[in-house]
Length: 74
Image 1 (tube, rainbow, N blue to C red):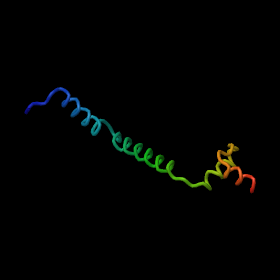
Image 2 (image 1 turned 45 degrees about the vertical axis):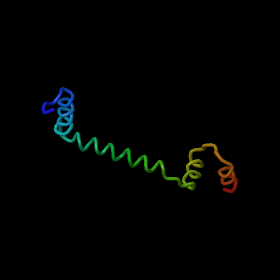
Image 3 (image 1 turned 60 degrees about the vertical axis):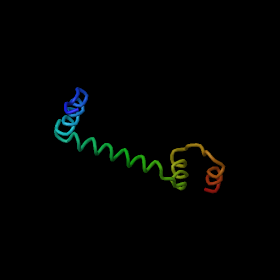
Image 4 (image 1 turned 120 degrees about the vertical axis):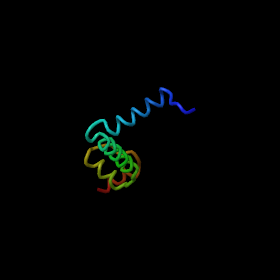
């Protein structure tokens, strides 16, 4: 129980390499994770006015009857 198996040493070496493996690697990884979380949160936001405006600008077809009516009114 006191000794470490080979898998424990692999994990320790991986953590040490991640932390001290080069200049800015950890901050780069955390920055990428933060960008991913922000993009995910932005994707969850539901603002119908943005969807209609995006459809008008890109020329996409409306997906619902409400979007069709909004396009007819404009």
